[in-house]
Length: 202
Image 1 (cartoon, rainbow, N blue to C red):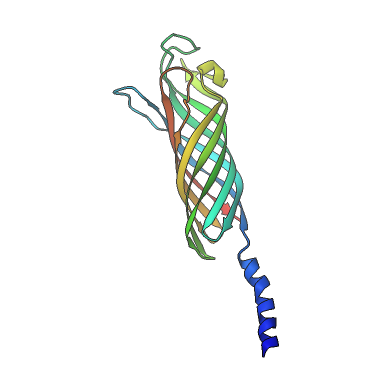
Image 2: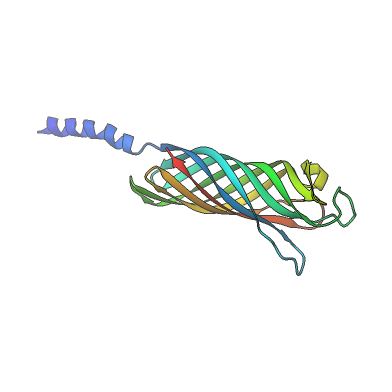
């Protein structure tokens, strides 16, 4: 009898250990976003402009916790306000479209974890690198580099969100608040963005 118990324990230990191993999912996604600049001045109204995103990454799940890292190509819009000192190539407010690369690092909690349905709550930091953009001025489309409109190439943001897995399909909704200034200058201009993505978690 003792031998049977010992054999049963020996067989169960590896199975228990395998059940505790972290699981990794590969994610592919695309979706919609809306961004706005919030100026730290009285009476300023934020107008959200729409854009799109596509990307991929990986997610490591262990019990009730997870860690996720992605790379996202993003096209978003902002309303550009000319500098008070008159520097820059544009003298009037206008809507601009910017292409950027985002590298978010998120971690969070998994309230529900079943084979068919998973629910995630998370927060993290977003590293954004502005690449180039486009605007229409006097009915002419022009391209620009970030420095030409006093845009910072690098921005840091704080992201909070939730996502669900339904079988192999993933739906992700997040809100990002800019930590660093979007534009160079004394005036505080923080970006706010909402993002909805749909994709696969394999």
